[in-house]
Image: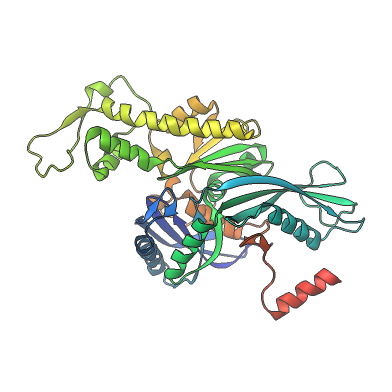
Length: 413
C-alpha cells in the first residue's frame, strides 16, 4: 500500500474530551496538521456513548473548529473506539497453496477465514492484521508473497467490540453529517503515535491513561500482538479528590493539575492548599488543607490502575514478550511522579510518550493527551499490508465497475 496523500480528518472521542485533527499529506507520507479542534466531552462515560444528543453536540463543536482553522469542510473521518468491551484475539489460519506462488488472493482468503472464525452476532471486528506468516512449518516470515510451498499459515491479531457500541458510535457520527472512513481501536492508535520503531521491534507495552479508561497495547517484532483495557482513568482520580475534599469536580481537576503528584515528599505536610468547599458561594473563610491529604487521596487510585494493568498483562502471558520497556501516554499520564510510580509497580523502564510522527501540531495540542488523535492520522498514512475489516469480517474489495473488473481478472487469471 502506497502512502496516502491528500486531506485526512481524525476524531478522537474520549470520555473527558474530543479532539479533531485535519491534516494534509504529501507524496512522501509526511503529515502536516492544518486544523485542530478540541472540546470538553459530554454524553460519554468510560469511552461509550450514554447521551446521543450531548455527544453529537460535542463532536460538531470540535469538528467545526478544526474545519474553520483548516479552511475546508470534511465529509469523511477516521474515528477511534475506546469503549465497547474490546477483546484481543490471536488466531492461526492454514490455507492450502498446492505449490503455487503465493499471491494477494491467498492472503485475502486467509484473512477472510480468520475473520469468520472470530466474528459472532453480538461482536464486531474493528481491527484485523497479520502478525507473521509461515510456509510448511518454516520460521516466521514477514511477507510471503512470491514464495512457494504447500501450506500457508497466517498468524493474525483481531480485536472485537460490542456490536451495539460500534453501531451507537456510527449513528452518532452519521447524525453529524459525517461518514466513517474507518474505526480504529484507541490502544492501537496511541501506540502508533508515540512508539519508535526499535521499541516496536524489540518489544514494548504502551499504556494509554485516558479520562474514563486505561488501555494497554503490546508490540513485538514490528506488530501489535495484544490489547486490553480497564474502565478506570483520570476522571476517577478527579472524582476521588472531589469526594475526599468535599469540593466540585472542576476544582478537583484544578487541584490535581496544579498540586497532584504520584510520589509523596517530606514537605507535603508543611504545604497547605486552598480548597473551595462544594456549595460555598463566598470565600470569606478559606479552607486550607495540607498537600499531603491530596496526595494521600490520589495515590491509591493511581496504584490501583497500574496494578490492574500489571495483572492483566501477566494474566495474558505477554508480560515477557513485552520486554522491559513501557511507554505511558494519555492525559492522565502527565501527573508528576507517574513514571516513577509505574516503574516501581510494573518493574520496567518507563518513559512518557507523546506524538512523534506528525508535524504542524501546536505545543498546546502536542502532548500525551493528544496521542490517540495523532495516531489515527499515522494509521491513515501507514504503509502496511493490513486487512481492513468492515462489519462482520468482510474484507474490503475495490469499489466501482473498473475496480471490481480488475479485481476479478487478478483473482481468476
